[in-house]
Image (cartoon, rainbow, N blue to C red; front, side, top):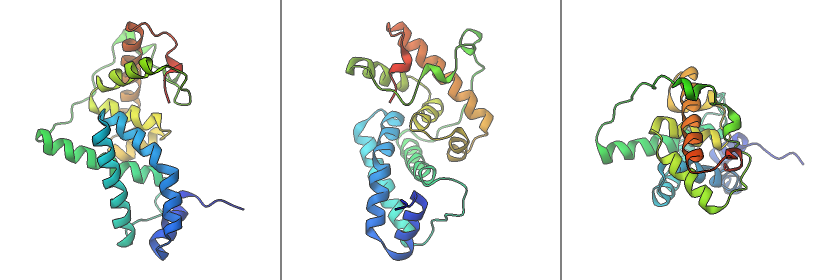
Length: 200
């Protein structure tokens, strides 16, 4: 039997109030959303709160028939956009208006080492101490770089990351490369050489 994709499930929930479709949608995406928010915020309480608000917003939009499946973006892109916007709004309220900084030019010593092999999103073989170090490395990144890495680690394509944050694709690529280099340098200073074994 063909398993319906996320967009189809969302449309069934929106059009027919199919709660089983919503439950399947929630089950498929809840862990990825929470991991993204944990990496973005660095705070389990904030991540849980935003996750709950995001799912409530999904329900509100479905009830108002405002979800559009004809968009090229995947459902997860739609979901992460809602979550990221909620996080940004909370941060702005908490700290006042923030200004977007341009990306720093890449340091020549980092540029040659910034590739996907630095962090493999499919692997997680490290112990809890190493994972804690990774979390520290991510928290040390500027928000603009951290959100790109957090989404990329959840399998979001960079073209969709660009759509979510409203930045040019080339800018997202630059942020990713610079962030990966910083994370690798942080972990190597902590004595971790097999960095690709660290990422979930």
